[in-house]
Image 1 (cartoon, rainbow, N blue to C red):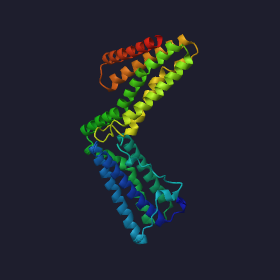
Image 2: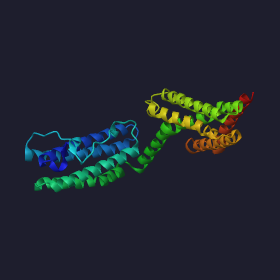
Image 3: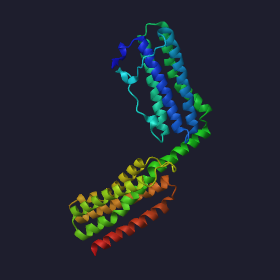
Image 4: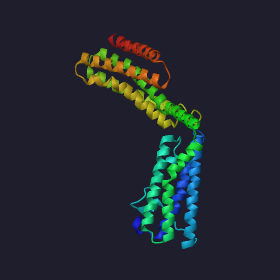
Length: 319
């Protein structure tokens, strides 16, 4: 790797050309990844990709006048201590709109910094002038994005895309997480309290609760991941939904299991019951907040189900 300060003007221009070509492809990747779900934002990134192509043309024209047709391959990863190789966010699907916008802002900031640093070290007036011009252009990309947003990403289009993003968030995170939390909080009640009232041993009850929680988490994680691949439903990647569902299932069971680390049986049981009440209230609120279910209706459904499982566990454990 070479230090940026050791690059010749020819190498700086070659690096700039490579960067512009890579950035244009990244914007194309963003546009392609967003086109189906966020078409207005995809068009904005198409326009920004065209801008990068124009910058590359300016640079290459100057390069050929100065150094001829041979263009050495110099990339970001070949230069030490300046620009870092970017994570391939543009290859991930589905793309998160907010993450893409923030990533693009970082790209423009890094490009502007690169051109200003390169202009400081350039001894050729024409090269320095173009580098400063490109630095100003990259700094102005925020204004360009704003102008494009005003003409392409109109208020109606933005509201539609925001609603789509909200729906995808519900499908990919809230729904599998809620299902897991409900399963972990409710299904583990019966084995936990059955073990508690059968043994009156807090440690044995804790072990049963942990086993039930972890087992339920693994089961729910695989069940959610294998339910569909997300290609038709838009519910995201299977591993993501499976992880969310599995983790929330485990947490739902562990919550009312941890009180049984308290040595006193009745104190642990009272605390566990209080935790269950909080868990059911949280589930009811999430259903009300994200699933458009009236709070009282959500609370009634969850409380009735949880109470029945709780009673079943106590009866079986006391038999």
